[in-house]
Image (cartoon, rainbow, N blue to C red; front, side, top):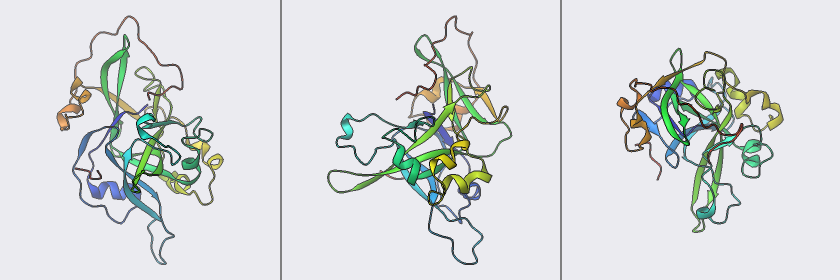
Length: 253
């Protein structure tokens, strides 16, 4: 799963990754949590003649997807993750898989090694060679009963690779830069055409750094939450989720 992540790159660095002309200024965010606004990129209008930039647009969405058919959000679970293996068939995600695939830029994400049914040791998981990554995501626009609309999104997950599996059995789907166009192209690329992109990251792509439990509190938003912590002894019995299971105001400031 992916329940917390960070985006600490500059707007210029983020725009360069996503192939955008520019992004409005925003601060580094070290502890992004569900229900908060997250930056995403979608395919946009066809590119202008003479432009060498892709046809992409950036927007903010609430992290926690709400399908258009939901009647009462109070009775609907918080869908901040979507299992990639079943997203094309599941009612909550199949429309977005066909029409609204997106990218979420990130500097890395956090995961917890579960112990005795509780969150145990937290880890900061980042690209081993630095830089940014783009997570596969889905977007839905939800029409609220009062008539206003809210853009919402979820990050797609997949079975963890060997680098992460000892911590958790799921990880976010990372889309390589050379595959951005294909993933975002919902005009000509159907879900079956991009299914091969929904796979774990290559071995040794990420490194997992143990950190303190400061990250557990959403109110902690400074760089200190990424400082290396001390790993306690390995528990005698580690509780694992069943394979394939996930737990289940727009400004970047």
